Length: 229
Ligand SMILES: [Zn+2]
Image 1 (cartoon, protein in one colour):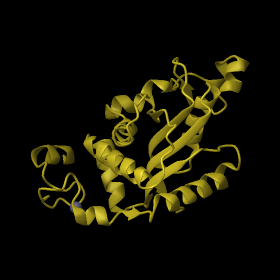
Image 2 (cartoon, helix red, strand yellow; image 1 turned 90 degrees about the horizontal axis):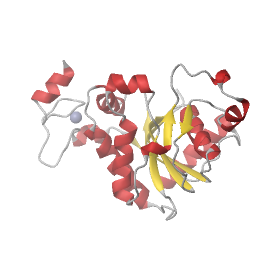
Image 3 (cartoon, helix red, strand yellow; image 1 turned 120 degrees about the vertical axis):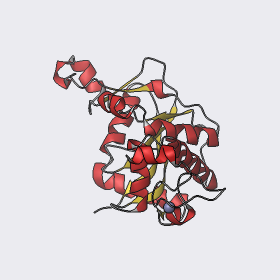
Image 4 (cartoon, protein in one colour; image 1 turned 135 degrees about the horizontal axis):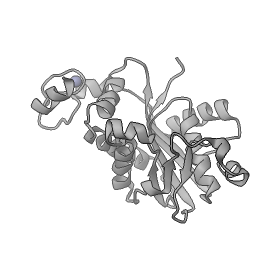
């Protein structure tokens, strides 16, 4: 029903339903100002580093990290991300990606990032939602920082594939087990992108699959970072 509403009335805010003015897209300025934005890219990176270090000690060391917003339950941002995921409003993903890219450019972006790789959706979820929102975010970032998006470098393993069915050398190469690198040769420095980092387990597992396949440096970016509830 909501999806129908947005198809019929595309010029209203996806969060509060108020009419958008000419310069607004998808979310009105009032709702966007309700998002809990980090003060600076360096503050966000520090918080991200602390959150990941607390949860993984030295088991997941990323190179550089970016996040735009704190994620709180029931905040207007949650509604925007929900609309992006479940209502087919994937252009919000590209919009967030652009914002994230511009945010990165406010600080120093290492020139040696080779490409942007979205964290892949579980293939069953991909069918359900029909697109991967992380891919749209990655596209927005890539346009801003002028790097290619290479989704083919990382795949989600098939649902039925049990870790124990793999031969031992493969198990060692892919300890977390949820992802596997694609068949292409791996660039040295990858920017891994997801919509929200909650526990960090997903992005850590994705990073470890890339590392096992030969990526030397993994940097990470997410639209939001979950606050401790
Ligand atoms: Zn609004």
